[in-house]
Image (cartoon, rainbow, N blue to C red):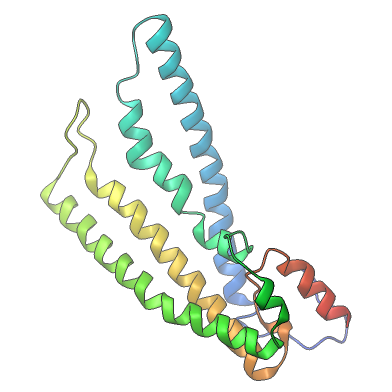
Length: 201
């Protein structure tokens, strides 16, 4: 999103700021990786079904691989990016009716209040992954899949989401204090459109 000539500069926490750009680059890499993960899931499930019902030779590792690693990665790792793009389910009727500063303040405080909870989850799961790695714990089944890798996926996803929640929460509070909505990263589905329309006013 480009800024118009003569518009006030956005801070490091706002859309297109240093932190937003850095986190977005990480999220973009993850997005391409997750596209590959979804493709691998599709191929494995199709090959397993084909082998199971046509040749009675299923891919016995498919279920565990998909449920332990691929599916959690595909569902959880994009959570921060979905928040940034306003893709989570939400009721925005009252948000659209609120004064802008009050809206930014409530969203900012809400996200900052939730961030410690997600950080506790991240920390606990990371410790569990470390313990599983040191003890070399594996899943029971035909293939001894390492448990620490599954837990590490959850820890990484929660960590990235916590970072995004903190980032967006701070940007919302900055907008509430300054009265400049352009400093806030919107979490509404029409966030990008709103940012453009507010710049035009």
